[in-house]
Length: 152
Image 1 (cartoon, helix red, strand yellow):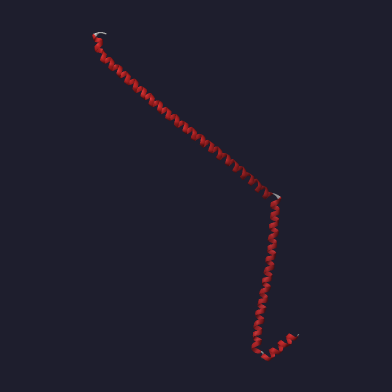
Image 2 (cartoon, helix red, strand yellow; image 1 turned 60 degrees about the horizontal axis):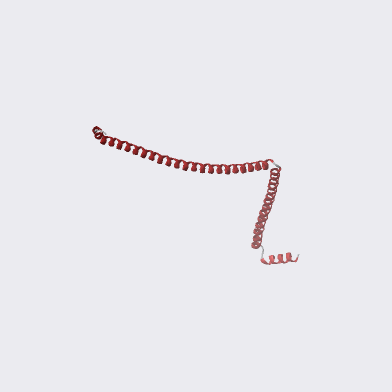
């Protein structure tokens, strides 16, 4: 090393120190980038797990909906068969017969109510007539008429 070489030594140390600092900074950046990549990978794994859970739940829900749809289809087929089959016709005929029977009984009851109303009117008329007789016929004639009726 020459004298000039010794004079250059501090500058060389500074350059080496600067190069080491730059290398350290780059290594730090690479470490940060690696940490960020690790966090991103963790986040992606968590997202993948969440998506997989959602897909499982969605599949279960779709299967349940398919089951419900099949049940509804079966019920609709049964209802259709009931409405178009003999069972419905028989049920309809039975309902018609029942309606006719109820109407007939209702007419009978109306007739009986009318008969009772006539009887009540007759009873009221006879009461009035009896009251009239009591007021206008002497008591002794009434007693004699009652005894005659009782004897018959």
